[in-house]
Structure formats: C-alpha cells, structure tokens
Length: 412
Image 1 (cartoon, rainbow, N blue to C red):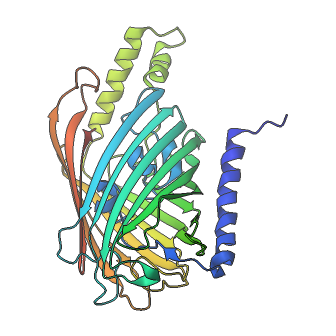
Image 2: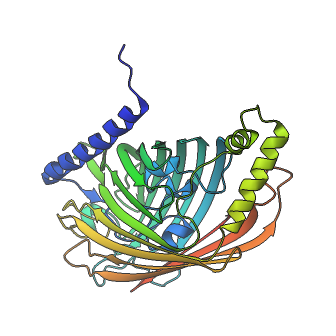
C-alpha cells in the first residue's frame, strides 16, 4: 500500500487544478449552449464590502467558498486546539425597476437576483475542514435565445467542501476542495430540468508570522453539466466558467495581521516551567491571551487587492447573446478600518466588470459595508462570554445595478 502525506495530497490537488485550467482552454472550441459567465460579485457582506478583493485575506466561514486554503487560517481570538464556527448571509438585487444583473445589451432587459449562503468550519490546530452551501435565483426577461421564453428563472446551487492545512506553523496554507453544482431553468417554454456537475478547486495563502502582509491565490475548475434533450433533440450543455484569482493585502497600524497561533494549553505549558499544568493554569493562560488580544484591538487600515480572471467560452450567455471567447480580467480594490475601535467597522471598494458579450458595456462598481457591534448574549451558554452579536450590511452599485447584503454574526 502506498501512503501519501497530507502535504503531498494538497500539492497534487493544486497542480491538478492548474493542469485542468490549461485543458479547459484547449476545450473552449467545443460547442456549448448556455454559459453562466457573470462579472458581478456575490457572497458574504465582507466580501461584497471589499469589492471581492478577498482571496489573500479569506478566513473564517466567509472564506470557504472563495479560497479553500482559508479553512486552515486560525483566527487571532481562537485559543483552543479545536474550534467550530458557522455563518449565514443574504443578498438581494431586486431594488431597481430594471436591475441589469447580466450587463445585457441595451433593450434586452434583465431582472432580479436573490442569494443566500450557509457555511460551517471546523479546525484542529493547523488543519481545517469547511463546507459552504450557496443558493441563487436569477430572474431575467426579454430573452429569446435558444428557444427559451422571454421570461426565465435560473436557479443555482453550489456546495463548496474544502480541506486545508497550515504549514511552517501556519505561515503557508494549502487547500483543495470541490464545486458541486445543482442547476435548473424555469420558463414558459423549453424549461431545463435540474442537472448537476462537479469541479475542483485549489488555493494557497502566505501569511508570515509578525508581518503585515498576505498573499493568496485560488483557482476553480470549470463545470460542464449535460441535460439530455427531449424527443431526440440534442442535449443542452450548462457551462460554469473557470476562475483564477491572485491577490495581496497590507495592513497599516499597530494591530497584528498575522499573529502567531497559540492555544491556552500551549501557553499554560510554557508558563508552568516544566511541570504538568492544571485546569486552573489553562484558565489563567486563556485570560492572558484574551487580555493580549484586547490590547491589540487598536485602529488599523487594511488594503486588499485582487486580480480575478473569468473564462468566457463563446457560447450563448444568460444575458441572451453570444459570450466573448476570451478571458475576462477584473481588477479589484478594497479597504477596511474600524472607525470606532471595538464598535464600528467600515469597508469600501471598487471593481471593474468587463462586458461578457460584444453588445455589452464595461461597468465600474462601487461597494461599501459596515459592521455594527450590538449586544452580548451567550445563547444559554453556547457562545463565549466575550463574543458580542453584530449586524453587517453591504451594497454593490453600478449603472443599472444595485445589490444589497446583510447578515447577523459575532463581533470578536
């Protein structure tokens, strides 16, 4: 029996995803009917508030669907060898009378979009496993391509299981995972039933201990799902494009961006001076780590950048026309700060959404977000005493487009 080390598995997965990326480019000549390429961002409130510039600083449950390596990032307020967390987010893009979610050509019309996600994350020291589930419903109008009716509803469901490990004491995270697609169309004519497909993902994050910068990259394999045609008709192909993201971030101020991961047990063992630490020693160590964390909660300014590459296959897009047969490049920039340390966090960003078809237009987006600290409630002992509840809001606006997002979480 051949045994593989965990690091070998992750490196192999990363190289396999890169090789698949190259093969996908060679396969782009194959005809496909429906291309789900889209240049607007959707995700958590922090992701939207930072204009999608997230691949380098991805962490917690918000990072699982963005960069699988984020599953191994230990948060600065986590002092247990084992930790568990979950998150929920919602986005609504139906505020404008003609909300152009696909950046469609003039006069083709467009509709609204609803997005929701749920994610869980479990860590043991530098190992992490995450699972994120995303559901999206897009309503489009005035589309007559490929025999579909002029009113159409596209339903997406994506599962993102991811596993990662932090090497060199958590300074290098490598992660791999899957994208599992569930997809259906609804309309008056030519409805496409539920279909499914699968693709691979891989990523890395570099976060040197004590330094104020991070570097990250992630790649997602394309997904091709086939639906058998009715009455001898040719099959319908649904194509989810490959994506690749490269980013870097730097944090100004005295607050540490990459603190060393230390558990309360590790600190107690160090303070015990060779003897076996007691439970009381571990409680004192946890209190000391908490005090150090609180002292570090000073003003900061985080600047995050990203370059996102999105495949254009040349097939019929959801916007109703033929998509570009070329890679779309989307530069992104986001900033984050605590305007009132420990109480109010602000975000702003911008990104460029390139046209996906020759009849479309590029758009510059502006984004913003806020976290507001609310109150302390331990949910009958399920939440740690120092975890406060928080309300998070975000918005993404451009020409003929407005998307809003909100979530309830914890202020740490």
